[in-house]
Image 1 (cartoon, rainbow, N blue to C red):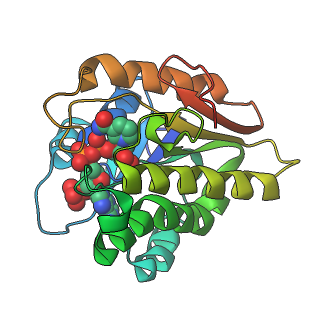
Image 2 (cartoon, rainbow, N blue to C red):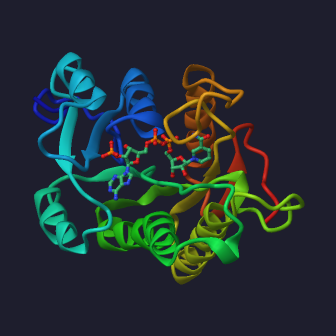
Length: 238
Ligand SMILES: NC(=O)c1ccc[n+]([C@@H]2O[C@H](COP(=O)([O-])OP(=O)(O)OC[C@H]3O[C@@H](n4cnc5c(N)ncnc54)[C@H](OP(=O)(O)O)[C@@H]3O)[C@@H](O)[C@H]2O)c1
């Protein structure tokens, strides 16, 4: 049963890449704050933490299927969601490669995999689903502080950095094409967080990070234009 079925009008968030990690934790946080959540998983056969969340959520979490690198998945997803009005669309799905390889030594297949997953596919998702988002809604993507060109004074993680800088550029183009609308656009730099991608040495936990990240997103609701923000809501230098 959804909030609509109960006569309750909760805001709705669609979180892409919610099977685990940050996407799953963001889904749980939005649910705790009274939102309905639609979360996507890539593998239709695996049971994920999102399934456990849905089981506890009394119909307020719906699970959809999407591999963001499969453009053919998007039109059927768009069709399945046609009756849903989204207040927030967040693409969290992302990947990395062997991060210490200098750029000139990165195998082409690794480069393509990271760039497509982190830069092209999120924008394909956003462009395919943006009309489901309310005219005053928010569209976000999980970028990274590593995507800042200004702050890259050390090198390292070069493909990953490039993919997030590309994502930032593509989001700027998308937001520029939507200039004059009332929508908010956010690129989040969540900080280095202990997940499968972040690894065990990351200084921050999901529990301490995710409420801050949701606060940052909610603070941008109703504020047209694009912002590139860290976990404190501070602008990250492009
Ligand atoms: N953790 C950090 O320190 C950190 C810092 C800055 C930015 N970020 C960004 O935050 C986002 C989430 O990262 P995380 O730390 O939560 O990583 P994670 O724990 O490794 O989770 C990655 C998520 O992305 C999904 N995903 C990967 N490729 C996908 C694809 N082709 N189609 C659909 N889903 C796909 C995974 O789904 P499966 O379960 O199917 O694999 C999983 O849900 C990423 O964009 C990452 O770059 C993370």
